[in-house]
Image (cartoon, rainbow, N blue to C red):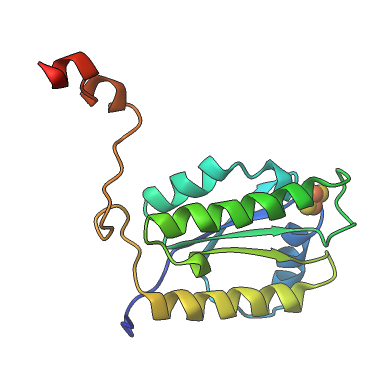
Length: 162
Ligand code: FES
């Protein structure tokens, strides 16, 4: 779906040591990129719990970007490898809900890669515009049960059998 007026909201989790500084460098270098990304600084890409991504999507974001240090350069040793594994798992899980993998992107950017970071955001915004609004959970064939109310609403087996 493509709507020329659609402006996606993208939540960007950026590592404090590299990608957040890349975004900062893009800003101070006056490199333009679309203002669709709301950056959230975390200490490391490995800090991004998958539930952060699910919460962002279910609260109205159209896509999520996770950005960290290049492999081998994580300030917490190998936590960006953990982010990589979580990202793969998230994409597979979200596909089960009918959510396109392109809506959750993982990228690496060092503190010196402001231009690369800006390009990555521009590319992602274009791709998400092509996908259209996520509007989760309304647009999905499977309606997730809100976690807070799930236990009380799930019937007990003995009640079902009676
Ligand atoms: Fe940047 Fe771990 S400190 S990804």
